Amino acid sequence: MVQEDLILKLEIVPERAPEADSVAEAIAAFVDVLRAAAAVAEPETGLSVELVGVEPGSQMFKLALRKLHDAAERIGEGGDEFPLFKKAAITLGGLIGSTVLVVTITNAMTPDSRIPPDQMAVFEEINRNMAESVDLQRQSARFWGVMQDEPAFSGVRVLNGHDRSQIYSVPRSEFAERSGLWDGDGGEFVAATERRTATWDVILVKPVLLPSERRWTFAREGLEFSALMTDKAVLQAIHDRTLPLQLAEGVPMKIEVQYRERYDGKAWLPIPGSHRVRRVLSPLPPTRSGPLFAPNKP
Image 1 (cartoon, rainbow, N blue to C red):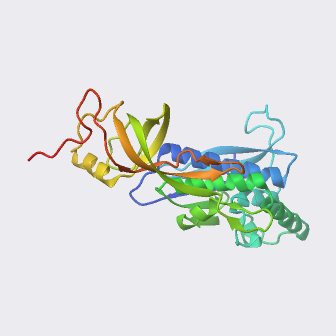
Image 2: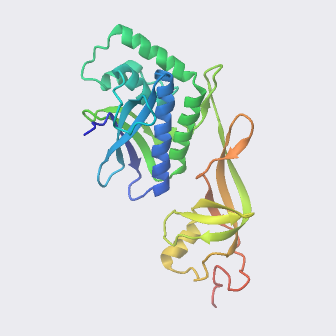
Image 3: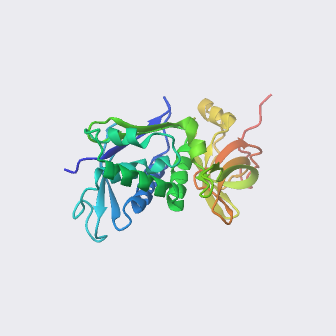
């Protein structure tokens, strides 16, 4: 059985549950960060990230890092270990620009705190190269943006797979800042994302009739998109069972939507999964049925 090198723990707000697609997107984004970091640490070798276990009833994902010499080889075969100092650098890839001392975190990944000077010198050089990697900056920003966009995530912890000691921990309060990019020239943090608010006429495709923030599906100008329903009045009506039954595909609605855009160097592009319905402004009456919200009876 392959032993995990690290554990990704997605911390959850009490009595909240993240969307399944948010969890999947967070894991995928984290793996992309590791791969981008590995491309800097050891450019000649690919990285295989194996999911070797999930803690029952939790959001703890056990990951193993292996070299991938041949893309045609089956995962788990033909790979070997990265040197410890390179594995440490790869694991820290998501902390570009962090003020955490690299020596302290390196020590947390090994039972022997005495890191050979030659390896430490290479480790520090890798970290400097990572700070200049545009791809790693982009992947790191994407991961923290995914974390920021799911309100049920309260923090991220990365643990040593060997003894479960903590390698690093990032609270939700830092997600927004980390979802930006670092200026490659001056090393200063600059915002790479902006939040937009707009009013859209949409068609309801698929509601989720649960009294909690869930993703609903809409169509706008012929294109479908999902958005987190956060309108408290709507959620309360679902809880009280006062919504009418005409809540089905094809109902036109006017909504106030908030979403985030990221600048890719040429244009601002909407970030998938960042849309939220802040308010349902006017559920327009459908052509063949009654209004979305029943009028108050005298």
